[in-house]
Amino acid sequence: MLTAYGRAQSDLLLRTRYGSASEEASPTAGPVWGLVQPAEGLRIGGDFREAYFSLKPEGAPATQQFITMRADLTADIKVDRVRAEGSIGYAPQGALAASLTSAPSENLVSREHWIGYEIDEDGSWLVRAGRIAIPFGIRNIEHDLWARALTRSDMNDTQQYGAALAFNVDRFRGEIMGILGNFQVHPDDYRERGYSLYVEYAPANTVAVGASSQFTRATRDIIYNVTDYRQAHGVFARVSPYPELVLMTEVDWVYQSLTWNGHRGGYAGFVQADIEPVQGVHFMVTGESMNGGSAGEPSSFGAWLSGVWFFAPHMDVRLDGVYQTLGSPAGYTNVWVWLPQIHVFL
Image (cartoon, rainbow, N blue to C red; front, side, top):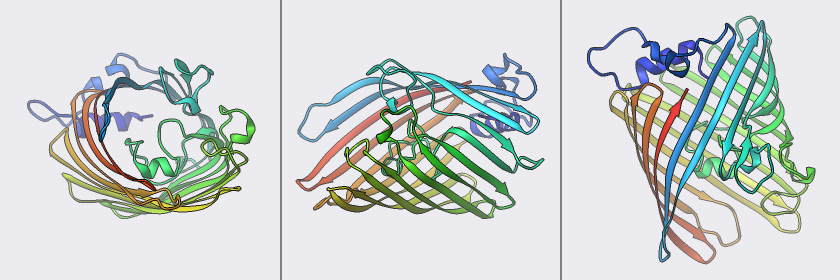
């Protein structure tokens, strides 16, 4: 959810500005291109992201399909120090862990919904309870990165129910969450319980470093169907050596103890460079690697080349080309992925 200040900065600094520059944000920066003026204390928003997905494994035919990656509406209300937020959306396929309905496809979803209380007058400390995004690592939009998949901390449907305390004080910010499980998953045996946290320190306006930690237990793991003790611990950093360049990196160690299936320790990490030669136009290069820890599993490697253009208020287009060398005990498989997409936010 964007504040009024966030919307203004999005318009002034994020999208391409045509013609002479202005020091004032356009009226279209407001909700629904400025056509809606919510009541004081109420924020509204929405996300629609449509993509065309093409997957070509080596020696096999390509798989191609249109994907509605997100079609959500969100609202946030604040009354004195009490806050509440909720989202509702439609998922033609996928996002089953966030679904409110139980069909194999064509589901209603709610990725986040919570109620909270700002402990201090400035809102620097927030305690909340409900379905919350897992506080771990860099919250980046590339939810298919292995660092997000192996730590189960993406922005798609891995949110969990629980209680969390978030803070943003001076040069420190962070959050710790007690995880009670995903109540949208049945039966209860599949629900993970434990904790997740991150803390970040910004010694300068252009540098931030942080660390994350997570531990959960599920009576029946949703993937392996046995009791699973799962850990993830890592570090991350963001650096901007000059205004047109941002460098980000994250490395996480992951470990699973699977009843009757042994133990597996692995890792996942990535490095990304984002350069903006012209305002609103970004080119990104990302390298990633991971090892899930299975017996005899070699490390996998991936390379992303991405371009994004924020060409109009509330709109951007993106193209990702991904090459992956996937390791398994049987050897390596090479995969190409192409993902053009259009994004509209309210």
